[in-house]
Length: 78
Image (cartoon, rainbow, N blue to C red):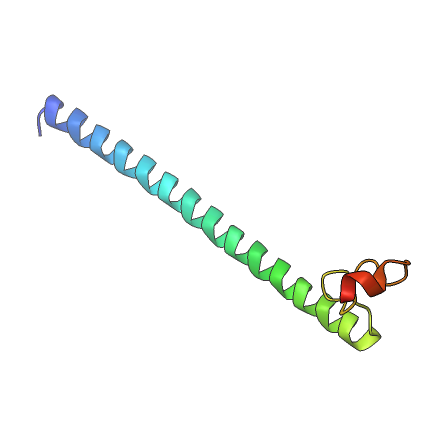
């Protein structure tokens, strides 16, 4: 093996190692993002379940209009 071939081979190995490192970091980041999303979705489902059992509703789930307790409710509902 001559010096030029050794240098080229060493450079290729370095580039390969660098590419593997970048791909590994991207893969880990992707896996962490997936895990975070799964965790957030699970917590949201748990919270929704708790709210269902406690009969708590968020404004977007409520069957009434925002003005139900005001003097305008009859006009808006008709």
